Image (tube, rainbow, N blue to C red; front, top):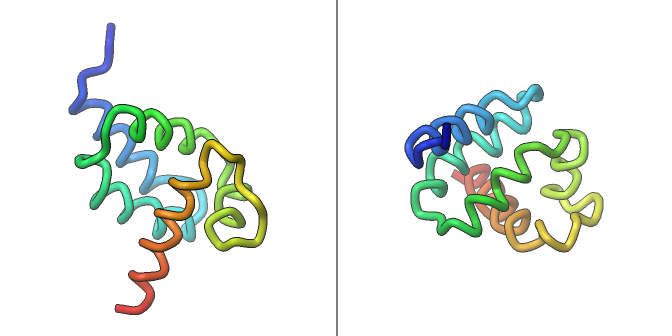
Length: 89
């Protein structure tokens, strides 16, 4: 059975909010809430793939402490800008 678009978004939001580390929950959860609905198919597929990466690798990419894989560079940059803007509020 193929996943419906609504089920896919719900699954991705849930996985964004329940990462395993509180830090990543607080970064990816709000990002997903605000951005997933507006993403095109290619971006959704990339984000879905990112959700399968380990938090211990994603967090340093977002913080700029280590280089992210080329496929993720734009998305990681977008998530980082979003996360930093939330800290300033």
